Length: 113
Image (cartoon, rainbow, N blue to C red):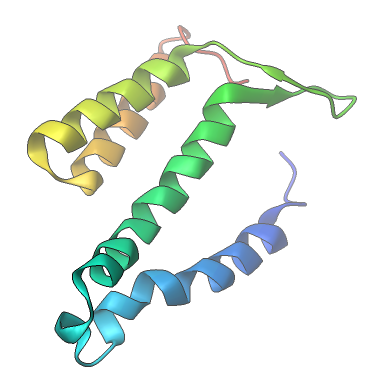
């Protein structure tokens, strides 16, 4: 396992955290226009969705060439979307999706990409 991308992940966390934290930290957040509040509430889920899309749709081989990937991860993303739509809870959806993939990988059904 390589840790080359850990600094990039930390940098991206630092770049995106302020936008995710604004609704929690900004005084008078409730006084902003409704469209701005909606935008700020959707920044966190959109970041997670983009990360899921990249990790679900694309695999990169040893020669650093990307290719379309169709695997069990699609099922996990679909389950997550369904749970979020039904329960209105992103956290539960993410936990169930991660647990599903972990179980499938432990059973040998879904190999690591």
